[in-house]
Amino acid sequence: DAYLAAIESANETINAYIAVTPEKAREMAKASDVRIAAGKAGALEGIPLGIKDLFGTEDIHTQACSHVLDGFKPRYESTVTQNLWNDGAVMLGKLNMDEFAMGSSNETSYYGPVKNPWRAKGSNLDLVPGGSSGGSAAAVAAHLCAGATATDTGGSIRQPAAFTGTVGIKPTYGRCSRWGIVAFASSLDQAGPIARDVRDTAILLKSMASVDPKDTTSVDLPVPDYEASIGQSIKGMKIGIPKEYRVEGMPEEIEALWQQGVAWLKDAGAEIVDISLPHTKYALPAYYIVAPAEASSNLARYDGVRYGLRIDGKDIIDMYEKTRAAGFGQEVKRRIMIGTYVLSAGYYDAYYLRAQKVRTLIKRDFELAFHAGVDAILTPATPSSAFGIADEDLAADPVKMYLNDIFTVTVNMAGLPGIAVPGGLDHKGLPLGLQLIGKPFQEETLFKTAHVIE
Ligand code: GLN
Image 1 (tube, rainbow, N blue to C red):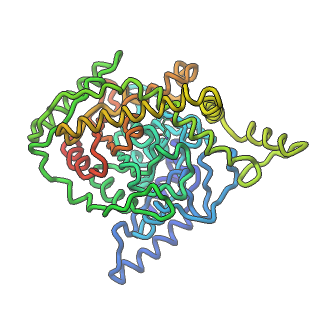
Image 2 (image 1 turned 180 degrees about the vertical axis):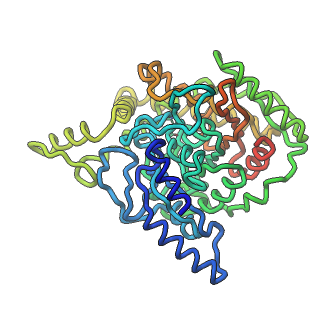
């Protein structure tokens, strides 16, 4: 009731929820009470969560914040949300996001932008919460849920967490099932939690993760008790500092934040080593070929026949065209066009195949660093703090917006786990995040190291 009241009073301003489900929440909470009274409480019994609109939720609004999925209510529940409900969690509603998770500011949503609960000192300017999981991050930061689900294809958990002073982890590719989550770029998409501290994210991830016969890329490995790793010593751990992340034009404050992170980990007994990840500079361009390519294929299903919106036309082709023209936003159309182009005969080898080769090199960079004894890698999470809503500079130049993802996309390209954890405030009083990158399926290392920083 307290969370529903908080949503009632603050959501009109923040716009984090695009659908609130009070009846469902109360019904689930009642069932929790019964289980608690019977001494059968699950790990998340009664914990109220917000769910990113990308997750399929049975009989409940699921539109990936796109107009093209108008009125769509799936007849199934995603594996990740089902896992959470099985552990007793309670759903408060569906959270705003960039349309089909394409964006870094939550401004591509059909439901309008989300306002970051943070503002710069002495300023009235509304800031973005980051994207694409902007609703998830803002809802957690504003206490409109105890935790939220999110997804990360190129930074969409970590960048919004960094912009809102919250914690977000993208686990290793395959750790969580993608079944029932609207697909963006299937070889990069992973689900993960955003919460207020490292411990809460650890508890949530434990529930979300599972092998799933319905997603053959999910991995059959035991899910450890992540919470148990919090508070463990990091003495003797080797932390790599990749020199290629010191990008041109990076604000001094970000460098200072990074050095502060280094100092904290050193104080806790970690050994800091300089490393090189030489193909880092190709990650962003390669990502913006691979991700749109997969998106153009995944989004072909929204044709006005099977789901959501249909705008009738004089024949079926006309209906397709009218539905897509009206149903997809500008950024989604841009990605479909880029993706279709790089996959077309004659260009496939020059763009898509080449990007895939670069992807292998990026992955190998990390493998070599880990092979040389590095346990985790520390970088800034983003090249800046949160920027203004409707920033003219960014609106005019989509590539500038893409540059936001410079520190996060490498992790998805390599399939590795990455966590964003608050590292301090900038001169405007806005949160800045640090990122830790780990070995495949070593999320525990990230939780214990991030806990030293938070
Ligand atoms: N900002 C990136 C993009 O627009 C990442 C999105 C994501 O991780 N879903 O593609």
